[in-house]
Length: 159
Image (cartoon, rainbow, N blue to C red):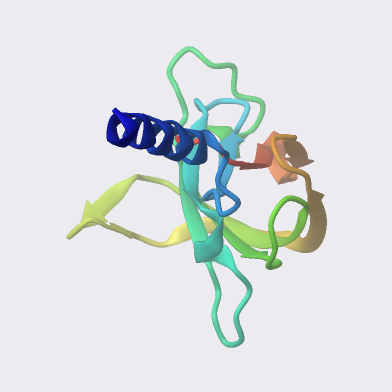
């Protein structure tokens, strides 16, 4: 009987340890980009994969296809846009900073060769570098050229 009681107490103690929140939860960086004529493009990556390193640039690519039925305000709105955003995160958990820059390339046609976008861009617009503070589970919105909306959020929930 004493042995059964000891096993029951040990099981209850282990169950309590398992339900305690982990100190080392994986954090994710969830980003979303949308132009006035495209649908949203969402990308989620582990935040540790974007930690700032010397001689390294972390990039995320976004395809912004114009959707039928949207009202075009300029000739560029009719073109396929491929956006490259460079993101470097500061180390730590919870509050962090992100260094963000990039470029928006407009193409006449969306064409791929061996899964790589091919062709000459007809216009490139640079996204000025900026440093933004990130707070866990609070999105930060950035307005880019040509009315493109970009949001960045540090989260601990899986995609």
